[in-house]
Image (tube, rainbow, N blue to C red; front, side, top):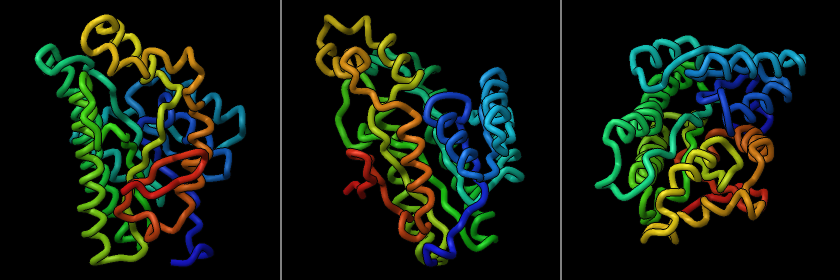
Length: 261
């Protein structure tokens, strides 16, 4: 597919209630794309809709819990756009695995791993029928690092990366114009970072303090990237032909998307 042929006019954003998801939903809408914004938080969606209306942008909200597979897949059956971007997730639990709450871990695994798989399964079926499209999944450099005190998050993102590699290989066998990719946005100024700081605080003075120090001090040091900046870069990434993105993990570095090996 040539650059001229790939002109997606709509996007579905999963996890659009806050953080990167909210910012990129508004960025897509501001660029003239019709946006379907999914989140489980109704109040957040109301605020998002109000902001989109203020900008005279075309945006429709759908309340949906990505950890409820039947509900989530039913919504996706009628809410798949040429661009599908998944940002839902959680950084919890924080701490050594023997101190983690299994229920919290399962909730996080469901919101990141299971929902990413369901997004790929449900949306790619429709995109293949249409003949073009891209699924973009949020990941992290934690996928390839031994990150003490973040076992659930690291495992989840490693699973997302491998999903992209395997499904990308499947897509290359059947289509040059449908793709799946993951992206590493870096440390972004979102509610998730605040969540990490609060959960990491009890470990500050113990053996895991050094490992969690970057999260505890990033906001104060001013090193977090605004979500709106990442959103602009993500909108640019999604504008690339799906075949170029397919099967790869893309890392944002100094304002440029580079393939991560």
